[in-house]
Length: 393
Image (cartoon, rainbow, N blue to C red):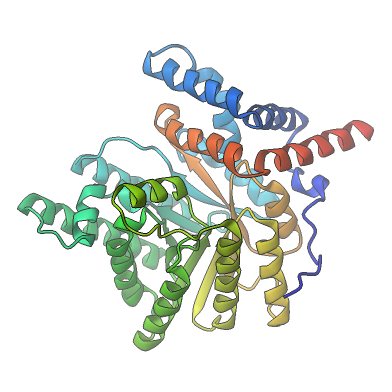
């Protein structure tokens, strides 16, 4: 399908309307840094070392990358970000991104934190979704053994049952409050048991409307079929299917493991194949919009334009409640704010948590912007265009 430029993503005045001059200059500094792989690598290495040695670097990290990519260290500290985004018709998905202890008490703490985000979201249009990662609620090793159909120890069996209970508590609360819950995707070798629990929750809580969303990583060769199968199961059991569609986050890790363990790489051979799969997935969801609710989690301009065109061809309103667009805070503001300005449903993933525990997340964002072809230079070009425009006023 030819994509007409119905929605423009190069309007920087709209894209950065929520940022002050100071914040925009900071963004310019951050993306200038990550645009140079060597400098970015040295900076992230020094930040990790500084925190490990308890050097006074936390304040510097907090006022630079943390402030750019995160909402705050707590839910309450994220209030300013939530309100600012909502002024510009962009919702917040509070994402507790602390990667801490992997113990039963740690998993219980993570569950309680997700429940707190649901309490915050209840009746609050500024927070349209909540989210959790399965590996925040159970050890990945347990999921890996379940997927490999290995015999679990009594302790592992109990841990897996606790995982089910934690997910149930979150989805039940989401259903009670009418707040949709996104279940993030993980590595392919632990994803199957997550899918199973996600669909069991959908059967239970997606009877009247879509509350539980599962994530589909379209860089996987099998994902389009997985999406079709998930839809057929939902149709057969008469529940709504919640689809959060992303390209994928663990490409290098997936390739390394496949090579090491001598099985075919589950990821598409190139970006073109992934893009094609993603866009076919969008079309499938819109074709089946009577049963599917879709969140397009993409930083790709074409895919977002393509979805907008699909909606138009299906005579859907821009703000149809079945379709949402989502990007990460601090990235692709040109997509998020121009879509929101055109009346589409848009939300930003807003990570929060103690600076030292959110560092792994921040490092991944730096690496992602450095490695994704043209990502940081695209951000930088738009930021500099807006700085120039403001200076010219």
